[in-house]
Image (cartoon, rainbow, N blue to C red):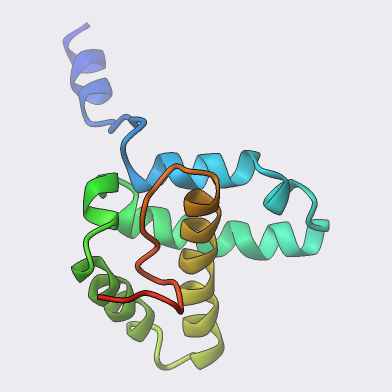
Length: 116
């Protein structure tokens, strides 16, 4: 029983107030569901990378203008593969755009029209 409890305690749980919850929400929306299988597979790969890095980030932090810098640094970590770097950025921006359009967040720090 002790070993089980130790193993289970290492798992992190998703809450309704993290980037992971926005990724899950995005996958439940028509913007994702209406994609073809090939596009979904591509998104899934990038979403997995993003979730591993930012999944536990609270929604409040996502709306802080400084988060844009964190996302840019993450994108830049793929600078040896510029196309992948661009897709990582585009995927983050898309998840946040859908969340903002549907009222889940107030600010999309990756949006082109962001005024800080």
